[in-house]
Image (cartoon, rainbow over all chains, first blue to last red; front, side, top):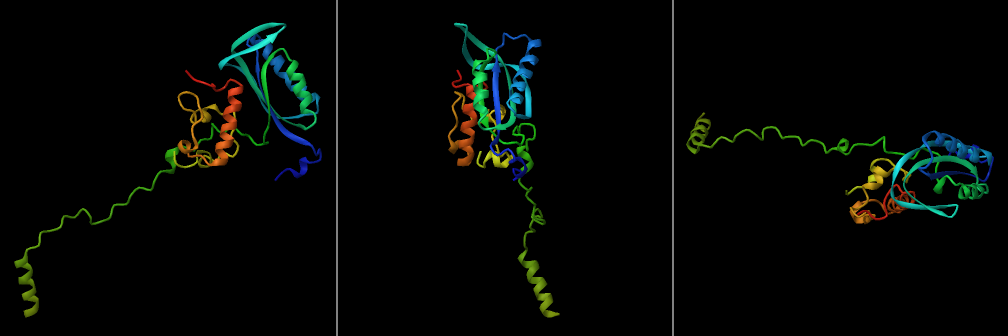
Length: 162
Length: 66
């Protein structure tokens, strides 16, 4: 596909990191942590393709994180993600850094594709592929006239005699 | 759902962040539905299951719903 010009750096791959930040961060500190994560990727020679600002979400189940020997339970978190291209041997170093980050509850590194993968906004509505309306056959609604045998006989006789 | 949802909507890569789509394939307990119920092709069903599991890990979807 369009990989030919990207293979200058032979081992580079597309990755995505999804992460949850601790909800104890105040709103104004989130952009700082977010740009810190982006700088981390760029610092290892990564090229950011797309990303999303972390935003507060309720998480589906409570998660634990031990910080300085204290168990912290969280039911909300800031969820954000970064998609980037980086050489394959650098990704493990990013993982090591994220493992030590006190602001990250969890993160997930995935291999992905360059194209935008979020499809929710461009839905084809189911009804758009609706069945073709059934065409009514013409003449179907005409009521069939009752046949009068005597009338027909007379007509035939008239035609024969003519 | 008889036809494959993902090919009908031209989705080539099933993203774990698209929880609105993924939720359609969970039963009320939060389990992944059988491919016989979803009508999704085998390939997409595998991708779907992976995406749901990734979303669960990041707390976007539940492992079990009450």
